[in-house]
Image (cartoon, rainbow, N blue to C red; front, side, top):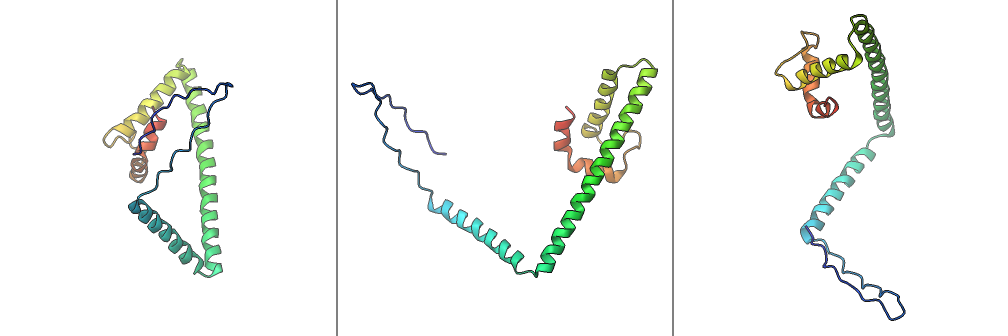
Length: 148
């Protein structure tokens, strides 16, 4: 890691102006760093050449598939959000009927989420399928940030 240059205290000129500091010499990258950068760039060029070597219809087909997948995930996200909001509303209505306030409901939900994220095999009484548990496990680091 490069060290920062020493601090220099400058004296103003008699007219009150400050001297312009001399430009610090630029740190030159090492031969090893240049070689690694060249290899990384060559890998990128190779990837681009492999892409461009495909016929245009294959490139466009790959793009179509990606757009379709993105649209499907977007629709799934909308469906998931709607179902979560509807279930939240049901939970709040039922809680109100039993005299439980919103903060208690949210605290219980967070407790259940953390039990799944931090427990060993906690599946909320069987309401999370094994495939869903595997999906959650793949994203535990991200989910733990969300459920603090």
